[in-house]
Length: 248
Ligand SMILES: Nc1ncnc2c1ncn2[C@@H]1O[C@H](COP(=O)(O)OP(=O)(O)OP(=O)(O)O)[C@@H](O)[C@H]1O
Ligand SMILES: [Mg+2]
Image 1 (tube, rainbow, N blue to C red):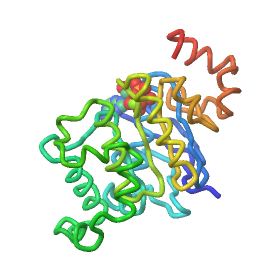
Image 2 (cartoon, helix red, strand yellow; image 1 turned 120 degrees about the vertical axis):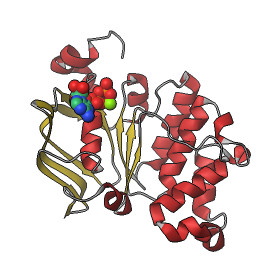
Image 3 (cartoon, rainbow, N blue to C red; image 1 turned 90 degrees about the vertical axis):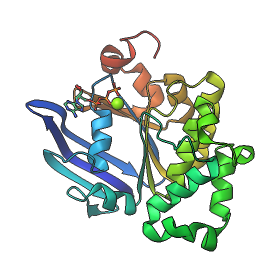
């Protein structure tokens, strides 16, 4: 069953169509990779799903409900979490405090007043998330002291603390070492099934580690949708994307 549907969505910046009548359907529990060259419209698509940008046309449905005109805040509350291209952790708070703040953001003011500690303490979910992102031993450390990879994992943990049904991840492995990228693929493979994920990524070795079905965008529109193996063999995709910089 599909959890997310984009029906011919468009976004114009002035006269420029950054996203152009793009349709996408993602099933519950699926991990979908969204690929395409720089400027193809991938991040803008995420902006349209999360209400950060208003559409110029088309509709967005989440869990069967039309969310096209909903506010960003309301969309987060309805169960869509997002990790941006640039990590946004609070460097002067500890790892644990960052996760608490993220929990509060997903729940509103009551959580912000400490309901997190009183009602949940270190709940199963907290323990599960902290173990999954591999930061159990860093709980008291300031987030500003984490390595680049650890910071990215903390941010993934922060999105998970909001308990989203759908997670949007924009270039989660950017700047990571090969080892860190591998660990990130393990996290994503664990999340599959219990969560629905849309992952934008340029690192093809990472995409191979996590992907089932891949959707490729080009110039704001749909180019192809197949398994990763078929996509990598597709001449049109190779032409506009995979071929362009040799070994993506
Ligand atoms: N706020 C904006 N105002 C004007 N143009 C924009 C804006 N945001 C994006 N664009 C343009 O829309 C197009 C799509 O941008 P977008 O960031 O969605 O691409 P992308 O597929 O995420 O690329 P990348 O892989 O480089 O992150 C680009 O040409 C970009 O310059
Ligand atoms: Mg982008």
